[in-house]
Length: 263
Image (cartoon, rainbow, N blue to C red; front, top):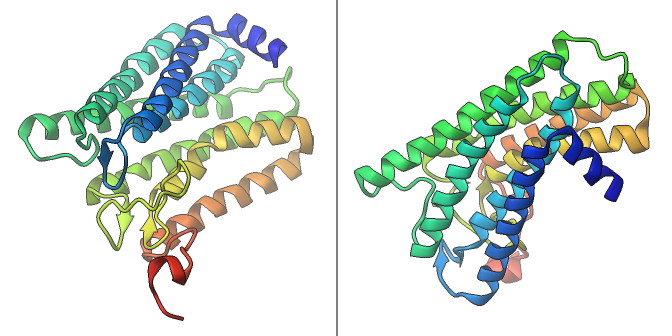
């Protein structure tokens, strides 16, 4: 792990330190979730900023690692775009958590509606920038990289972009649930609904292809065809969970005893 951290810092020092800051914030928010009682939609208010900060940490480090391979790439422009846009999201989500109010889907006032729209715009711009990076990986050859690893990066970026945009399905509904209003079932930290469809499942699976596919390809599969098959299966998993959610079905259903439903 130490060689990886040293190499990442050498590749992209800016995103390395931004990731460290996000990880530190995630740990702070997690502690707050265990020491405060403020709730939003039935779960501790600090779990949402915790998840966003942790997810941004993984994104920053992954992109810092991958973008190093791109020729003639303006890394600092991308770095500061990520820092400012995703940093705005984390700060706003944390401020609203401290107030015990929702950040996403909050249209209760013109100000909150505008800030929610700004978060959507920030996420869109980062996703479009990532789509441009995906294009660069498809447009160039990288003879210094193993072919299977290159395809893992390409396909992980593609899946990330598709299922990042899937967030619009939640924004347009002003709810991440299908069959209820923003249901949270305390499924550990994830909070996915165990009673109705939850659009966050496919969003989570698809976006974290960015870390899962290249790691599995590089360390375990070491084969181009195997990597492509894995990526297809992974993408299908994200798609199936999306269809399942749109049908109002939970990914993990609660037992009848817990829901009060008789067999």
